[in-house]
Image (tube, rainbow, N blue to C red; front, side, top):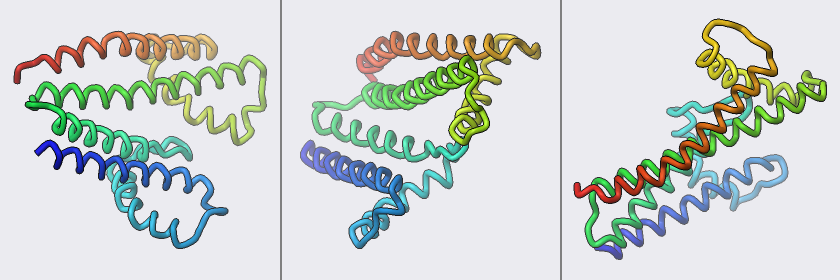
Length: 195
């Protein structure tokens, strides 16, 4: 039975690689075309389109649904590899894999927003032209996060913009570091559950 799960994990791994290649090629849509790209699109686009339709993670012109689609495949592959390697599979093992994968998504998103807030702070401090398309995109991405984080801390009060950025940055860093410290403990706890 382990060989079947290992084979299925290999198929999921190949499909994940094809989707990753498709995503990279989509960045160069104007310059890359041909029969191989068309075949690749027919294989991968239905899966990616399902995520785009059902899990709308678009922020500005950035679409994070492909990241979630890749992480989902990674979770499935991890479960299949665990089933292939384990003498016995427990609910705790599966929950640990799922928790670890969810944390991977969350930590990636937190790190992404930390970088965005740092870029926004640099633009603010250096008085960059915030009306250029690049800074407008950074603003579009950073504003909702800063608004929500500042509402948590300050409530309905409005404060200094720079203070708001620093508070948001500090909260995101605390979340990232706290999660990185807590996750190994929780994953280990789940792995050792006898269920």
